[in-house]
Amino acid sequence: MTKRTLPFATAFALLFGVLTSAPQLDAASLPDPLLAQQWGVFAIGADSVWSTTTGTGVTVAVVDSGSGPHPDLAPNLLAGRTYFGLTESPDGNDVDLQGHGTHVAGIIAAASSNGIGGAGVAPNAKILPIHVLDDNGQGDARDVATGVRFAADSGAKVINLSLGGATESSTLTQAIIYATEKGALVVAAAGNGGPSSAPKWPAALDLTIAVTAVDSASRAASFNQRGEYIDIAAPGVSIVSTANGDYVTQSGTSMAAGFVAGAAALLFAAEPRVTNTQVRDILLTTATDIGDPGRDLVFGAGLVNMIAALQALRQLYPPISTPTVTSVGHVGERLIANLSQVSNVTAVQWFRCTNQGLVATAKPQDCVAIKGATKRQYTTAVADARKTIRIGITYMRNGTRQRAWSATTTRFFLIWHTTNAVTVGTRTPLAEIFGTSSSGKRTYSVLSGPCRVRNGLLIASTVTSVCRIRMTVSARAPYPRLGQAIDVLVS
Image 1 (cartoon, one colour):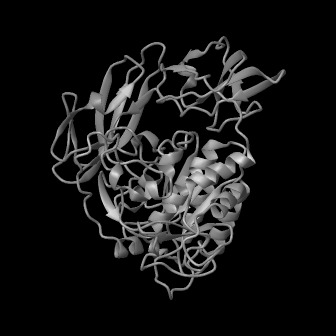
Image 2 (tube, rainbow, N blue to C red; image 1 turned 90 degrees about the horizontal axis):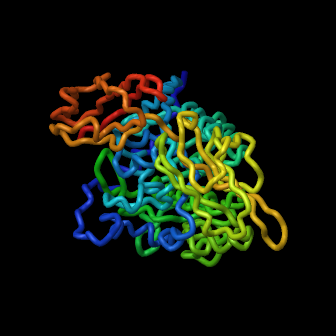
Image 3 (tube, rainbow, N blue to C red; image 1 turned 180 degrees about the vertical axis):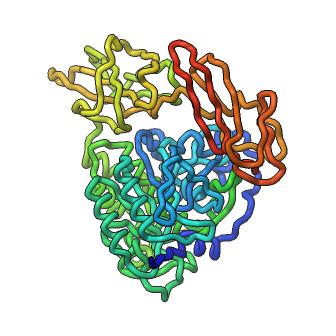
């Protein structure tokens, strides 16, 4: 069995990027203390569209070295999957010990306004981490292909591939075709081999959007490759983002791809009717031309411009009236529908759904009306566990009865975790790590790693490590016996 390596996923990013701890700012007035250092967010105008779209309801798959755990990603990090050595690990064992995938994920969707770290381009998008690369950034293209298919089948609207190789893999190409046909936009790093290097795959594939890097002065990075396959440019030099429980600065087209993936998530979230082909076209046609006039071999169409992209999206799809619902995903949570964008509402109905989804103007097939839930408020119940919720409305517009459904909430859980990172050598109350809707008796155990549990405390190891901790809750009406394990990063 021949192993196909994809070296620039991590090796190039680290070769050309100086890994340093992000300097601390005296920025108490900022919602996120490192936001002032995230020049790329402002360079593409992401902050200017956050009042309209933040990525809510969109899943971005990061097919990389895993992602997290990290406190600035925790609200947006879904349970991932590992495909390594042609072996699947379906238990969410996708911990990123290398840091590359976590850095990319933070660029895309680090949580905002939480008082820690920075903010991602799409700070309310969800990250689906798929672990296919080892600690040296190496992997098998067949594993990557499997991860891409899993991402598409999981409903990811954007698939980020900050990886690549010197030759095309037919298996990976077929997987990208599959994902594209299912409606996903595949974003790929163009490579860091320098101006004379041959095109990298899968960025060279026409179906992907190939991203090159620029610095804060919109100059091409020294490591950039050239060629007709380059589609668009994005920030990729001295990028501050999440990594292994900390914040570091890295450079590379891997980082630039993350900015484009986040930009695509913002467009998908702003308009549920838009297609992957349209998002690609909007990003390319609205990019700011920063090289030779027109499309060129260095910058492609130019630098991502979110303000112009959102304007183009609104011209293509005039806004529709829709309700919104926000949630944290806990069973027993009280949901309140925001109907401020809709007038003349004549009826409301809450729906329980199987999948996550965007705003809809026709009833989603996977949603079932919740009996008796016809008020503006709804309190989630045991039946909502692992489900999502929408609210549907009927309203009058220009004398015609219209219907609309909100984007789904996140999934609701009977057990959740409020953090998945602790400091080396500390003692942390387990009640501050786990939460549950049940009032049943809690018990804790260490499944793996050098941590200990004693008297309701997690006693962290004295070295950087990952500990898998399980909480079990005894049955207490109306809840059954519950149990969940999480990986806690000790750093």
